[in-house]
Length: 214
Length: 214
DNA sequence: ATTAGTTATAGTCACTTTGACTAGAACTAA
DNA sequence: TTAGTTCTAGTCAAAGTGACTATAACTAAT
Image (cartoon, rainbow over all chains, first blue to last red):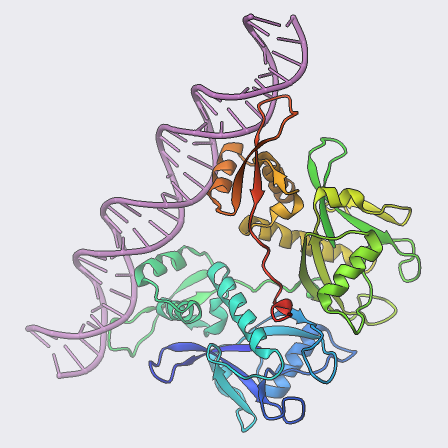
């Protein structure tokens, strides 16, 4: 499951979107589903997730993490399927490059319905995890480019948490995190005072399965 | 992976222990390993975890949650193995009933070394998750019986976080959580003022894979 | 019966964090 | 030059936290 920021159709403010692929065979032929594919013998779980991501959407994520292993008995009507689901965050520049076609399209993550299999529940759970991680850790920056303004960070938080935040208080909190670095640059071109640009210097935590990989 | 509270050999204060099983065949024959087994076609992931737990140790956990899916290429020297690991908390009364034998024995979770496969790394990760969950959510109570004193809760925190906590401040925090209910009972038999007994009224969150199960 | 020892429990105090709010700074567009 | 907008720095009260003190309530020893 891939999360990316895109401007809302109406307000133009950033919202959370995910790409889905259309099922071209049974079961659930014609319905939209999460991209995915089989695990081969020669690749780790994370490598398989990366590869499937690239093959179906052409995306290379800046953040990739295991979400959950789903293995209920009746997930697919035809056979027993165990899905080890990963979720990714991609930066806007990346997301813009994603292949879009008749069978691959972006949707707003909070307005999905009628997906194949149990994919609606999976998206729900991923959104819940995203909100949790956001409230605690430093993950919002993987949805932005290398340089960003504090207002952009706030918009990410507002999009994910679905509520407005006080600009002054939010700024105070972000500036207290040591991983955010001030740059000398300013974003020009707005119709107002130009905001300072910042940079994220932290590294995402390694997945436990990859810790001992050389 | 099963966590339970047991008194330390030296200090007698509660510490975290897990049961391990001895490998009776190659690879890693003779080494200690986490209990586990195959997933059959007719059971969900959680059911399989429960069953394997019961079959190897005789335990029925009061708390069971998916930990992580491990699928690195070289986890086993003989074949490719993907392990979907669950972790459980059991109450002391339960833990005392566990089968112990030549090939099943309890170990201190923080003093393990030389386990089979990548099981050392898995235990490390589980302990990290346990500490995290403990600091935030209400999970410590699943390691205790139905009734407990606030000092017992504090000892659980101290065992998992591996540091001492101020009794007065800890008490203030716990009493602020609405899920902890005062009972009229007191624990008798100590050589000092008898502490009040409390009860935990919260329910553990459902695993996402089981949400739609009837 | 009294006292010492131990833990339970309540409370104080300084310090930090948080949410609501005010105000000035710095830019663009009219 | 002025109005409009956002950026940015503050203030202030409320709530939470860590260190600490003091009293309550029991048991065991004298």
